[in-house]
Image (cartoon, rainbow, N blue to C red; front, side, top):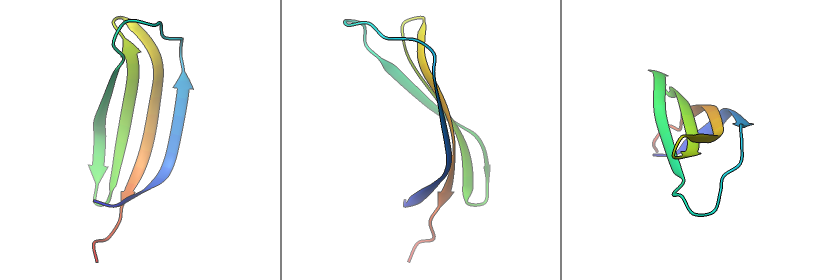
Amino acid sequence: MSAITVDLSMQYCGSGTVGPHVLAEAETLRETGRLPFMRLTIGEEDNLIAASTATIRKAAMP
């Protein structure tokens, strides 16, 4: 699938540490036609490092 980023926002909430695994979780909040609205969180254990929201436009297949 090809896609174009329409909107992207990133908020940095804290810092990570060396050692624990970093986990990124992405979820689709809503999808209308060709526009999925996404949320991403990045953290380690109980520590939130960053959060992001994005709107993506799916490109038409040739």
